[in-house]
Length: 381
View (cartoon, rainbow, N blue to C red):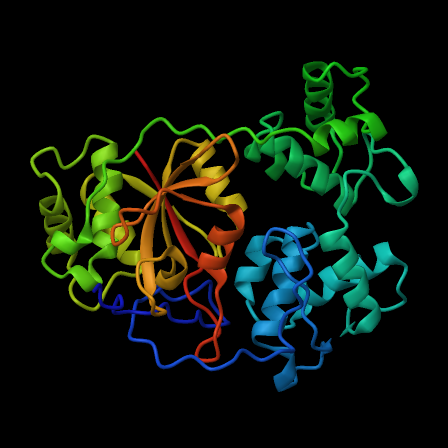
């Protein structure tokens, strides 16, 4: 029987973007606190149930605040950089983002308080970021709202808009969004107006996602054949990616993982995202690290740019073991149904993961440190 992968992912310090994710032995899990997150959101982003305030109190930092920040980033009220600069702290930037949400919802506050009214507005925005605003109104050029962001994300999913274009104006219906809307309408036999009306929204609701472009499929390598099978998921994952890009030509199978680990100083303690980057650099590849709590948008963006993704999460979710442990796998594309194509170095039978399962893999929680995983590294030539 496969033993539990030996390292868990450590929580990131709140004052910096994060410390390297590490794998470690996990204590017996305890039930998660029921007041931390509400299960009422899309894409794995949720609204915190705790009341929060901008007063510096101990209750206004930690997992509930980070959940709030993630939701605000998802809706375009807070940038990822601002979240990373004060992750888990209800600071001035978070206060300002809450104020913007409250203003949109007609709540009289300056962002200092996250309570029942704001929670309800946030939950509506997350689960109800429909393709059209309330009341059946249309979306058109010049609009700016969470509904616009939701529409842009759908355009990206079907390949009408790129992630790079979305990044230039999330939530703002500008010329690129209008052009992408026109292209979608033309492709679906609709009136080409550039305006999101009911017919356009309905067509989008039944449209199939376009798999992100990826130019290579990595060979499969099993970590069970390496020098240290229970802690070599990182080197084995990186070796698969390196071989896909034509690197490590002098090595085959587990020999590639063993060589990479030796070059980067990776041992039985497991691999953090910094180790993944070191190994990629050893063979001339470049890498980009996600923020903690990897959103699927980051994975999609990397795949669309031709990268392969080393993804760190909970081994139990991937099926590598029955125990909770930090674990690296390769994400290398999507199938026609929108499922992610994966290679798990400790579970050769795993071929795909649904978006919901990959989200759970990144974000599964317990009572010890609040999270497993949540890191991803995009690697490309």
